[in-house]
Length: 287
Image 1 (cartoon, rainbow, N blue to C red):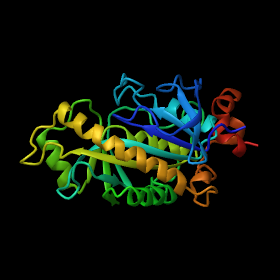
Image 2 (cartoon, rainbow, N blue to C red):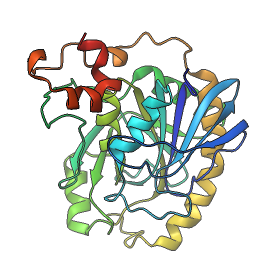
Image 3 (cartoon, helix red, strand yellow):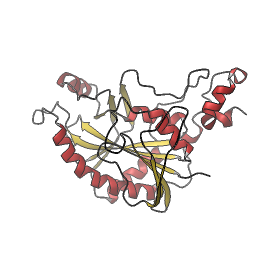
Image 4 (cartoon, rainbow, N blue to C red):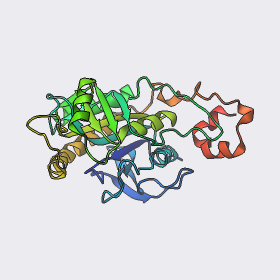
C-alpha cells in the first residue's frame, strides 16, 4: 500500500516540512544505493506527503554527490505520483529579483558526467523530454504563490551547472546571452529521472541572488545567499502547503505513461537481473 501520494524535495535551507501531522521517519534501500536522507512521511493539507532533504539534514551532500536515482526511485517506492521540488537559484534577469519565485518550464544541462537515467546495463529506453515540467504541478505552484502573495515568474529556463563553485562572470554573461533565466545546480537530473519513473515534477525556484553578472551584485557570497534563503524558506513553506491543496487528486497528464513507447530493448533479451532492478518502473510494460 502506498505510503505517500505527493513528494516534496527540499533544497538549500529547506531541511524539514512544517505542518506534517502523523509524521514518521522512513528509511529506504534502493537498487541504486541510499537516498540523501530518511523520508519524513505524514499528512499535509489532508494529503499523504513524503518529504526529503536533498542535501541531507545539516547540508552534508554537494549537488554533484547527490544520489538522484536513489532519491527518485525511493519516491516511486513510497507511492508518490507528483513531486514538488524546491531549489535555490541565481537570477539571470533583472526582473527576477531576490525573494521572488521562478517556476521554470525548461531546463538546460551544463553538468558533467552525472547519472541522469535509470536505464542502461541491458535495457534501453528513450523518454520524451521536450516539456520536462508537468503543467498540472506548475499550475498548483502558481496558484499557491498567489495564495501566499509571493511574486512568481512562470516560464523560462533553468540552466543546471555543475558547481559547487558559483559561475564566473564570463559564464554568467554567456548564459544570459543564450536567454537563460535562472541558474541552479540540482534540478535537471531530478526532472529527467522523475519522467523516467513516470512521476509528475515541477520546480519552485527560490531566487536568492543575481548570480555575478549584475554590476551592483558582482560577487555572490554564501552569507548573502543564506540570508535570502532563510527569508525565502518561510515563503516556500507557505507555498508548498497551499500547492499540496491545489494538486489534482487524479492525474490526467501524460507523465504517468512516459515509458509506454520508450523501451526499445527486445523483451526477450531483458535479463531477470534487469527486470528485478527496474521492475518497479517497467514491470507493467514487460508482462
